[in-house]
Length: 530
Ligand code: 1PR
Image (cartoon, rainbow, N blue to C red; front, side, top):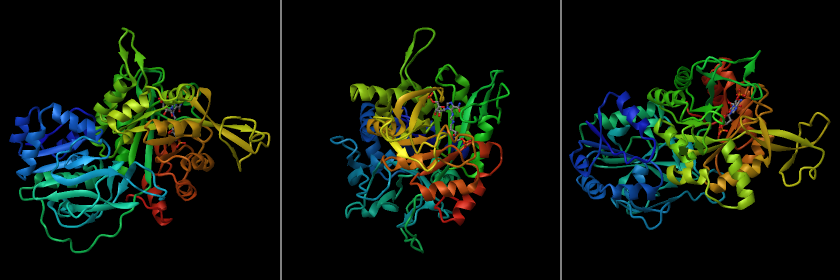
């Protein structure tokens, strides 16, 4: 029997699903006594350091947890579950951690390195010693998502199990005796992660083996991510389907294009090696997602079968239902997290938020509220821009105008990227870069950068747009729209600093399998997860 320490802060559904998938039973810790009586305890921390420690204190769990750890009983902490073992964290100054490991966790300090924070994606590990949890581990990459990390010191050296490189070398897991914790998410690291989790769950001996690994691992590298995107909506019969637009028009001869069933397709992409899956509830701007229960069901079922990160977007905004009940954007996001999402993506409402920011300055807004609760790494902003051509830089005053190598219909050599809302139906007086920069300031952790002009065209990504945004924000950017062949992925990684590339049509129509994209990238020297 495995005891799960879920203090109700976010998505622990995936940890639960992974444990079940491996055939183990789980009991939730509902009191300090349950912690005392646990045979093995898993602590998947979610949210910010401060909110996690405060919640543990409110629940009266701190002493029980400390006693459990000091008695060297089997423990696996994940992500924030690693951070809380330290004395404190720069993320939440003044809040005490469990203090099992000396020192504090701090924010990545990358200096001039052109690397985005959060560190999101698949990276490797370098082992310092041997542990049961890495039995049969074959150097596969593992999934990380965090802005804070623990660094090696004289005092914590004995705890370090592995380190990882991202601008600096940070601690990616610890193990001493029976207590271990990982910065990466085994439950989201595909087959490699499940293997690590199984090793912990099945171990009947002390986890730390204390011998040095035979060969030193080499410096690790973050992989570029390949993301499969599923645009989901109801068709005219009311069935939830995956569709795909042509410059956002999803109808063909009046019918909504039907490219398959959401859960089946997501599972297929997981098995084919997608590094992440994104669902966009594309009619969420008019249908309220919490009334659209099938979408939540899709997420729940997918998270039982898919062990890579899941993002969901569509309809994250304040809403009053037909009975007059009010829901906040945070309520909608929370329901998505509870149903299995690791990240949520905000489209239209992020545009309205940025517009309000330009009028009023900092104000109470959904981006900041959701990222304060769940961490900025869980908040993606989906931008749906289209090109507006102008004759010179002065014609679009107040907007970021670029000189383009792809002139407009009347030979215009300049353009700006206009933000749209409601699935591209309405253009706004806001440019994509201003939008991205404001959202970053308000707490967003990643930009999903679509492009209406390229969507569904198979012409390749709009590199000018991607460079404009990525070169002027400090958070990761997912390049989206227009992928038509493997060479387009190589082009986007060679020609821009995008951290990930997303595609829909070519995968749905089986024109190019994900494996073929990855083989092509490997051959062109791009770091990817195999
Ligand atoms: O505004 O918060 O409710 O969110 C709605 C979300 O739904 C937004 O993220 C918006 O991008 C998306 N959306 C709305 N309408 C459409 C549509 O197509 N009619 N989908 C739509 C946009 C997503 C793209 C696509 C890529 C790759 N499509 O990410 O998957 O362009 O396509 P490709 O590889 O086939 O070229 P809110």
